[in-house]
Length: 236
Length: 172
Image (tube, helix red, strand yellow):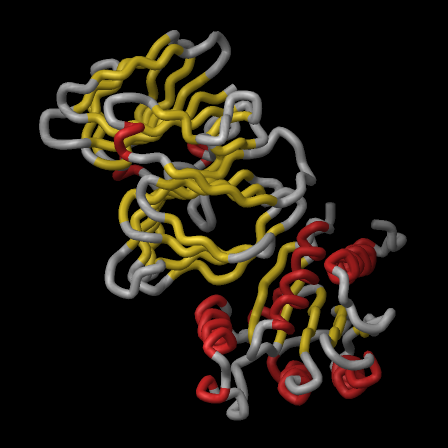
């Protein structure tokens, strides 16, 4: 069964410096129908104005991934020094038993557009940690590139999350078609980050998502009008 | 589990006091407390032009990363962790002295910490917090040099605040 979550139906927070669209309940936005999907708890589609961002704040027991679509994001946390994240990179912060961090647009002139993803960890009280990987566009072009997965699935090219969750990124053009086999009992959430794709013949625009349960395979086709970027979450 | 809100207020111009505030804040999160971090506005003596390039970068980053405490923050908090250096103590004194005018603090916890001096230097802050009706958790054990010691302070503040809210024993 496929269930579409249209971009325009998401929660929305507008703070002047921040435009944030919430696929699932977040902050003051609450929708019991969309409080998460399996271990995927938060999927925020954020645009932050130049030089602005989220000041220092705390987290606990959450795997927090950031995936930049355009611009650059400066991150700093209590586990160490700061980092700057750009397109073709992904970062994972394991909040574990406690972490404080801040996130700011690293540019004084350009907005940053990124996805913030929270995955509930399988275990609580982990030591906090931070990891970042590079994922070149060529590695995502026309194929699903694993960017995060459980330790046994993640090599040095993917982020190791403390959950049975696999996250893939892909960039598709009109001639591209990718298929993802879904193991029995697992479910998939697909988020169309930019552009337009077709999932099992359902058309998705930027910001749309689709939940898939009880299906054995997902077929995604690129659209004729340019490149599209998507994230696919394969969840226990 | 009973929710506990912890407001961490600090005065820092070069980053050392910020580090103590952050680490104590992480300890509060470890004990399942919710935290807010607030930096007191720098005084006129804190001139970026007198700082090294690295200090100036830290100063500017802190100005971006933190907002000053608001009255609503103190109202929200079950406990306040108040962090300063010797040089910044007068700013923290002034903040605590102003608090009763903006928030009702009766029965809340105040845990003052200092980075570079003996706890006795904090006595004026203890007195101001007690005068506001707060329960003072004095700093013990001298300088909080290890990360674990700093975490322990944050955890202890939450444990005590939770026990006070529940009326139960202080186990944590």
